[in-house]
Image 1 (cartoon, rainbow, N blue to C red):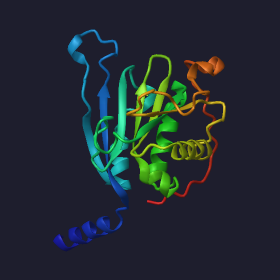
Image 2: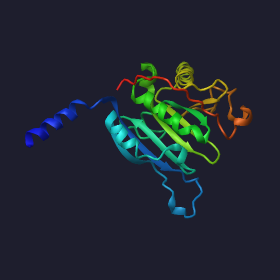
Image 3: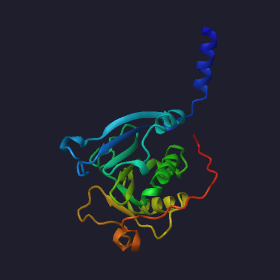
Image 4: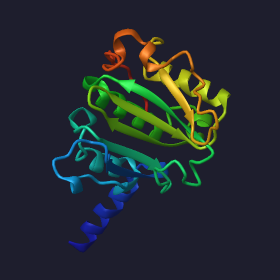
Length: 219
């Protein structure tokens, strides 16, 4: 019996698909969210679980609340290599973030697809190497998804935007904003793509029309 158990254990170990990095899921409830009791919000990031294989990812992910079902003020985060998701962390402070405005009904599928492209090494290597993590934020009338990266420069921002639009099939009309964490004038690269310039999408984001495609994730 012991020999059989040992054999099964070895087979399970062999079949584990290791990822390029260790990742951590975090969550936070914004102190600005409406609460009946003042002490109900969680002001700091809390760790949910770590994973470094695709099998462990799915074990954790299937139990996480999906963005479409999250209450206002809820934040879900996935960062690699134990990087804490705060802007003044040593791994983040020289970088910035990309922000995508999302329709509430379509946030979960966008969130999941970006995560799979990150952990599955689908994005180009130079894009992946600079990404620290991804954050979902639930708002009252729309949601946002942010990609945080460690080194900020305009060429990278433009390349990341094009990559996201091409691989996640985001229309050109949808505004994508970039912000540097330490920026004296606090201006965006995409000054002509403010959310309030996007006609009727100010609060609703865009209707994400995902088509089926055969992604070969490199686990």
